[in-house]
Image (cartoon, rainbow, N blue to C red; front, side, top):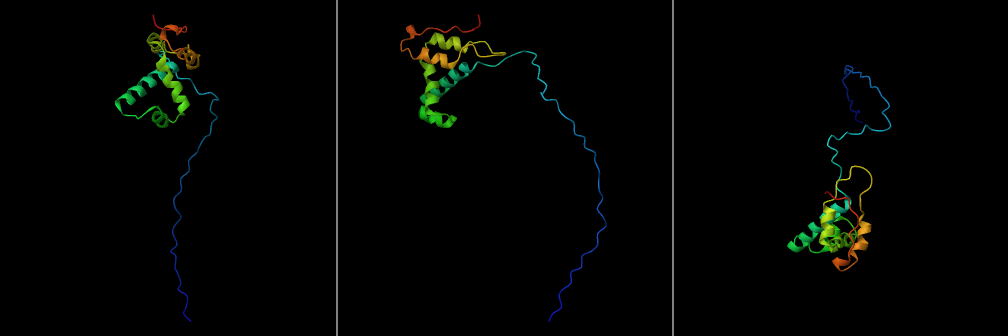
Length: 138
């Protein structure tokens, strides 16, 4: 029989070690709020949705997007939700203008919701569409 081959492992000196002290501190429960010097606020949601509807309509007209169903797939929303967004284009031009001129919302709720505007857009004739009370710039 053959003798088993013996493997010799060299003995290495111990590796140098480093120590570091880590201090764990409890953070405050609420993060400090960033202060805005200009208090710019945010654009009301309905104004963003109306702008989105106009952009999608322009992309469909230019051929970049095939139709509203294709836009719904691209945005990851249902076709029903896309219809709700598209119906904002049925509002009278004066109402659309007032929506796009809404003041930025600094705190609290938006001055008008898209849900309220659904009933307004359901009226076919622009003359019968009642302008909801909007907080617009003077």
